[in-house]
Image (cartoon, rainbow, N blue to C red; front, side, top):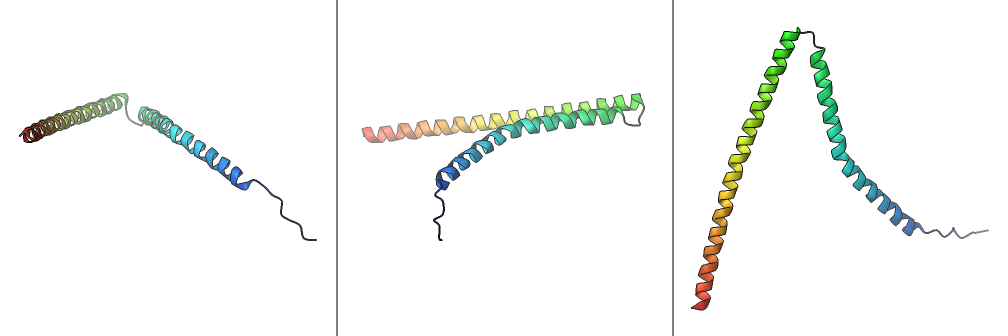
Length: 114
């Protein structure tokens, strides 16, 4: 009357499923960047179409676009300058650290020699 439950290979199957899920997550992570790029491209195209179909005259729309382009150029230029300044500062800090380390090394060498 009483039957033994069927023997199955649950741990091996669970391990395989876990590996498949992990592989799927890795693939999703890879696709995430691609999806973001496509989303941003679509947003840009949508914004461009919305501007072109806006209820403004052609002259106003062109002026609006020119102003936005100039603002974008200014923002990129400012960001680039900030990055250059930060890079120069980090380079100088790194150079100082290397000089300090070389000085400490030289002092240690002199101490060991006597």
